[in-house]
Image (tube, rainbow, N blue to C red; front, side, top):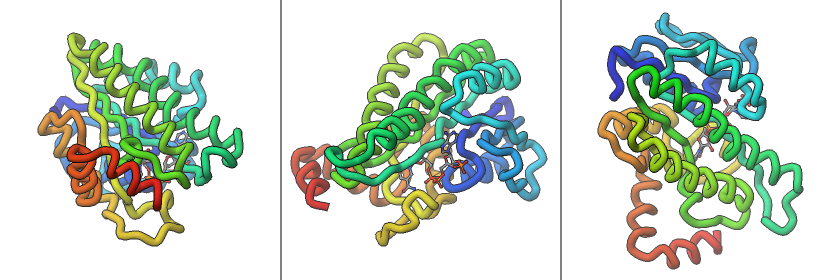
Amino acid sequence: MIDQGTVALVTGANRGIGRALVQALSATHVTKIYAGVRSLAAFEPIVLATNVVPIEIDVTRPEQIERLAVTAPDVTLLFNNAGVLSFGDIISASWDDIEHNLAVNYLGKLRLARAFAPVIERNGGGAIVNTLTLVALASMPELSIYNASKAAAWSMTQSLRASLLNRNVRVHGVFPGAVDTDMLKDVDIEKASPSDVALAILKGVTDDEEDIFPDAMSRSLYSAWKEDHKAVEKQFANM
Ligand SMILES: NC(=O)c1ccc[n+]([C@@H]2O[C@H](COP(=O)([O-])OP(=O)(O)OC[C@H]3O[C@@H](n4cnc5c(N)ncnc54)[C@H](OP(=O)(O)O)[C@@H]3O)[C@@H](O)[C@H]2O)c1
């Protein structure tokens, strides 16, 4: 699935897991990688990678997404990676934060998927990779609005998979545990490295895994969740 014919688009490519994905992809034989960033000025070029094309994309701006589907007509592999995390309890979190998490983590991914599914299909097929989170499986109260936006994106991932089944577009969900990026910089917990997570995501896509658990924390908690999801819900509720 990831080969010389692949043209990838990664959103949120300037830092964190997105940047690591661009780096990992640039070490493969893919034809081109569109590195989607909100500000081209903020994108530091990736050394040695000549096939990386920075492009401007804010996933909350529908007109930019529509334009991108025209200016990047060769995409075959979409990494719907961009995301935000606002902390806060479901009762007291601000409404602005609730709307913003849904706008980026759910609506943004959905807009990209709807714009690029026909592009990928026209190019002979490929995949959409939605980066979700382990806490889409069960809620941690302090991450309540983030969890909800990602759980909605998980449901959307399943819907896309069914709708695109016969259109040669595979749909993957990625459920990382804690990863060492800016997103969790103030949380003191053991974290996986973004580069290891990026490699595991590419392996999952290559191996055609629908649900990708790219680090030790996510694999172990997924096993526990399959065994007894109510126990994981209770465990997370007390964290
Ligand atoms: N870190 C973790 O522990 C963890 C765990 C599970 C899942 N994830 C998921 O992994 C993905 C990447 O997260 P990360 O850890 O790499 O976080 P990060 O370091 O905070 O990076 C977030 C990226 O998303 C971009 N972004 C935010 N809002 C955007 C918008 N409106 N339009 C376009 N891009 C936007 C950011 O761009 P700017 O630089 O312009 O803000 C940045 O490139 C997210 O979907 C996140 O939810 C992360």
